[in-house]
Image (cartoon, rainbow, N blue to C red; front, side, top):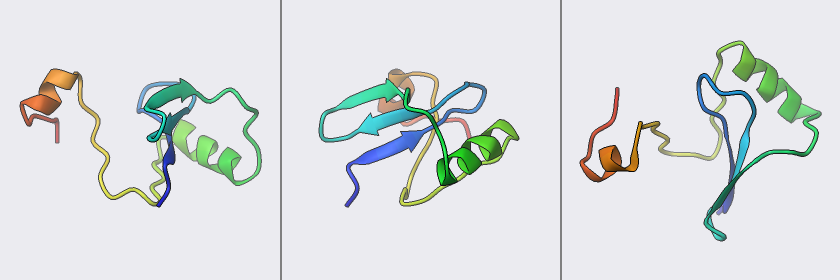
Length: 72
């Protein structure tokens, strides 16, 4: 099972690297190229790419999560 994911949020530039084992989230600073460049281009055009993730929900705050609320 993968322990690292790439995350992009609607309305934000760039991508983030999420390392589940280390418990960290950091902006992706390495140059994007190849297949990942196609993903970035789709993101900029308003598209979404999902692979290897079963649930992903964006919320405004951690409080929303603990209260079981999310937009959708």
